[in-house]
Image (cartoon, rainbow, N blue to C red; front, side, top):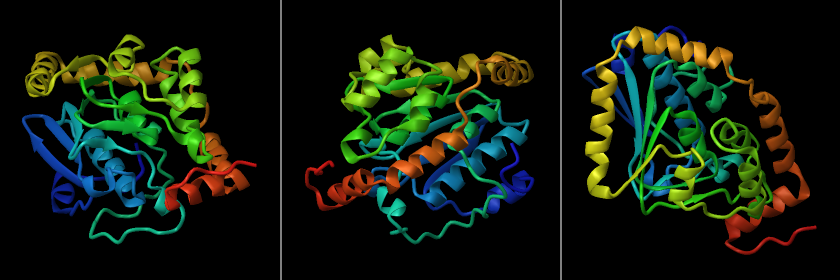
Length: 270
């Protein structure tokens, strides 16, 4: 993973994260999405911060695993549609500009450390990069899981590819083209979620998983995940899928969908 210049512990600890809360303790790097007022939508610099934290974890042998969570009742609403329209929120992040294009699906693939998702809020659209990319997903039993892109003139191209790595393709296509909310217990049945718990059970469940992983060789696990990335079927190229997303956004219906979303009305398709 070489999205930034080499990152050491001293460099990392001096950085100011605007969109994330970062905690490093006892071989665990905890990354928490912290943009609840915007439903943790993925601001471009927020994506940079996530990739920076993952590259640090990848290169630091003292970090054995990552836990990723979110503040607020929405874990992640996906891409920041206002940012896509050119309205980019100012920030005070010190994370540098990456030296290559960040494809968030690839960030999860290349970290080569166990990633545990602690999902306590609703997930929509591009938020599923976190669930599909994590190795273990613990989800709260009252959350909503939705793919509403087609209702906004868009399509979850990259998410479709990521979901097909953990779910049956027919179910993924059905979900993508109908745009409904998938019940969390059904998500568990189809392999997207590892474990469903209530709010009181969440912290003990995460801690149990962390403790179990700590009993095992971090070198063996890292090498195993690197091998898993090498041998699993190749996903459709994320670059191509990103191009298809941009093409769809720039279409007449894509622009109508974004405009209708902004104006809080139903779109008129042509």
